[in-house]
Amino acid sequence: MTDVDTMIGEISLDKPIRVPGGATLREVAGTMEDAHTTCALVGVSPPRLVTDHDLAGAVAAGLGADAPVEQVATKSPVWATTSTTLRDAVAMMVNHGIRHLLVLTPRGEVQGLLSLTTATKLLLDAMVPIRAPKP
Image (spheres, rainbow, N blue to C red):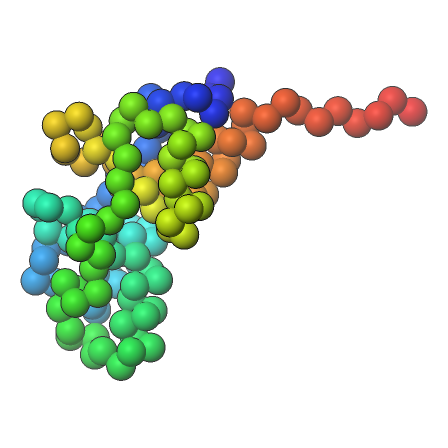
């Protein structure tokens, strides 16, 4: 059972999809839709991150579907290492107001992504079950 002090490198992380840096917003949105995911890594090194929120912001700002994704990708995404605890990872996500945390190995390679949805499920599983009162 996972608890709040479990290192995030020991849990099943989401495997990120990757899109090329030259991809358009339309291509990225289509790739994310096909993969049923809400974010993607852009390029290889250093990794950048684009989320469904970034795509919605691009549309709201009037960017066309053929605009390059690099215009809206986060160039310095918040990240943690595989030795970060679940408790600390969730605190980072809450403090930065993000729903996706990039998880890196000690060598700086992408291990995966921790979504707020996955983190919440893990925290709920770690809680002591609530028992119904006896009649």
